[in-house]
Amino acid sequence: MNLIQAGFAWIFDPAHWSDSSSSVGIGDALVQHLILTGISLALTAIIALPIGFYIGHTGRGRNAAIFLSNAARALPSVGLLTVLILAIPFIKGIPGNYLADVIVFVILGLPSMLTGAYAGLESVDRQTIDAARAIGMTEWQVLLKVEIPLGAQLIVGGVRSTTLQIVATVTIASFLTQVTLGTFIIAGLAQNDYPKMLGGAILVAALALILDGILAIVQRFASPRGVSRSTTKSKKNTARGATNASTQPITEGN
Amino acid sequence: MNWVFQNFSTIWGYVLDHIGLSVPAIVVGFVLSVPLGYWTSKSPIARSILLTVFSILYTLPALVLFVLVPVALGLSILDPNNVVVALTVYAMAIMIRTANDAFAAVSPTVRESARAIGYSPVQRFFRVELPLAGPVLLAGIRVVSVSTVSLATIGGFIGIPSLGSLFLTGFQIQYFPEIWSGIVAVLIIAAVFDLILSTVGRILLPWNRRTTRRRAARAVAVEVTA
Image (cartoon, rainbow over all chains, first blue to last red; front, top):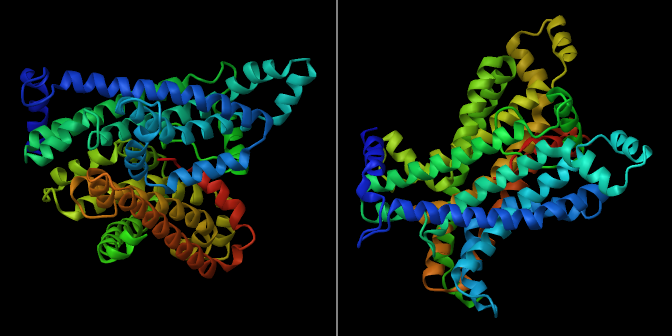
């Protein structure tokens, strides 16, 4: 446990926060980690959510989506990461490794978010949707005013597991190309500098827990008022039973 | 393909290392999770504590857990047991929740009937609740098996030999066949494990052959995409 203290001491040593000739500072690595995570998350959302909503709303392409999420579980993400980071610069017109890495993170983050989006929509009671159509809502209104609000918990759940996946993958990417918080873990490991290694591990753990905590709160308040937690939950369970939707990170309250 | 044949013994060595990391984690994780999941299905306090602790542990990226475990347990940083322990933790995070749901789903009427005809709590567990929870437990361990085999590759990045070692060296020398052979080997191991588990499940749970798929779907729904 002394080593854990040493890890914290390493983090709180101001000298480690700015870049030095021998090593990058915590500040820069943290910013880089957050930028990579943020850009990848935003791009994943732009791609995954509309497709997921389309699948959930129309019911088309469900099997493809289920296959995708199962395949993503079996494929070793680090293997895919190494292959893609090596391969993407060979494709004409894609510069540098920064973009290549972001593309990889997006590919790895897609399945969870896509599954969350369509499972969220499918978890909505069909009768509610029929009722919405019966009172004259257009398909867009059904989607925006009924399906997305009622499915919000599962949709945010998908965003949540994608976030964790991307934070973890960005950490591992420091073995290959990027300077992120994972860099300290690797450098510490290679130099037998355990306080550095643990300092890096603690920082990554804190980042993952904070981001997950924020999204857990968002998830809790995602359902519209008037939809009681117990109702959504029971609906969610029956719907998931029927759909084989594997979305949620295990988290309290879900 | 030539590369694979020339280096078959190296790859095979990593395959054995990989199996050596993942099988103990899957087995120990399952064996520990079933009683714990049974406990949490009975006790709300145990449920909130255990499920919360494991969901927090599950949030930690593998790379972090792999280096925190040796410090917590006082093992050497290059001890393969670190990876086994970390993988067991991930397996339990998935499996305790599944076992909890599986036991909670056993109808109270059935449980009461067993008691009414004179079953002791132990008999009730082994003859009534466990068989009824079996299909969901099976679905859970299949998920655990696939994700454990996939996660074990990350061990290769911190110097614990596994198929992930092929990814790292393949990347360093920019040699695709080496990485691909690692990925394909991981997929083959995952498929073989899944086949073994589903066969064992079919033998052990002959009464549920028809409903297994439906229940499996439900159990998997509770699971996680890591």
